[in-house]
Amino acid sequence: MFDLDTGRVIIGNNVFLAPRVNIFTAAHPIDKKVRNERLEYAKKVVIGNDVWIGGSVTINPGITIGDNVVIDSGSVVTKDIPSNVVAVGNPCRVLRNITEEDKLFWEKEKEKYYKALNIYQKVSKKL
Image (cartoon, one colour):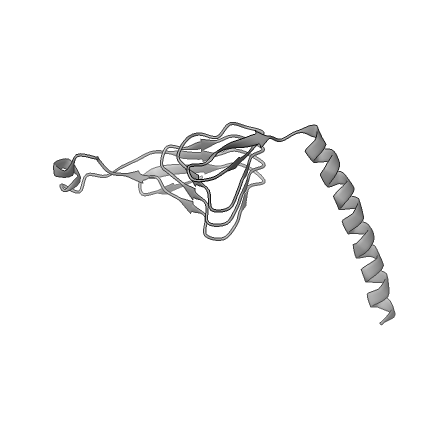
């Protein structure tokens, strides 16, 4: 948790932030007369647990991102994102839910990765 432009940013556990993620808390009035008086206010941003935010994502003031969320690179988050979803785009929107099939797919991929890594390490030791 930290403060940015007088707004609080709360980041949960196991959050991955790729390069060039922008988190904004500052906001300004729409009315030109008041805005030109340099009035600024802030809105809290909350990012849940187990979230992966891709490169060059922009998160606007006042946004809450739920738990277990993946936000695709280049997205501009202008509305709250619920838990357990993949979200994409400008403006960012929910593409789909994260499912049990995702878990099964990545468990198989993980097994392939570790098998390949084990073979590579055995070959490297012989060199």
